[in-house]
Length: 232
Image (cartoon, rainbow, N blue to C red):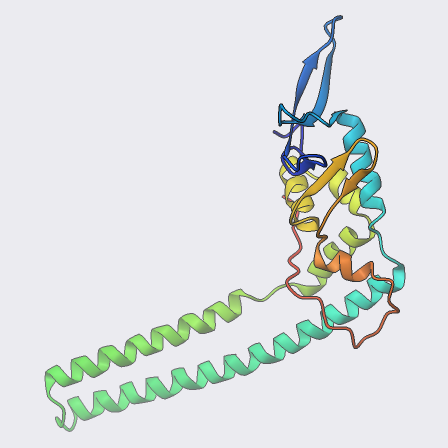
């Protein structure tokens, strides 16, 4: 439900059951929103909507890394991107050469059949179909490389905003954007306790890496698998 983005994403700390949420009506007719454990034999957590969501934003604030780590992140992503681009350029050249070679074979086949009549009609059609299929496959691979191109600076700008200000990215997002963003940060979800707050067994790789207490070092293995969740 759009009123409760963390519902089912946050689990009760006591029984690990995903929490549910809903509205309750007080004696004066006023409505209140709550998150609570859905396990009837547990019910260890029941918290007002604003209480849990405010605590979640404070928790997001705690993830912000040091500025120098963000700079290092940007440099490493650009290095990885340049390497991938170089690899894509080599693939593009190889595929284009393959297409040109196959087109040349098609032309020679046509000449042998039409002008020299050295190939029977059935054999010509079979070989021509094979060559055209190979050309179509190579062209599809080439198109896939072209379609995979990204505006790396735009992606980096979004990623840096998310890293520097995760609280704002979540609070300002659309309902669907919030769901995608929190899932990207915490792939296994979170647990919540009224006394201890939020806990998680796994944070998104780039936040975990950037939050490391180790000294920034360009020789650190580049974080991979990061796909920024673009806003809706």
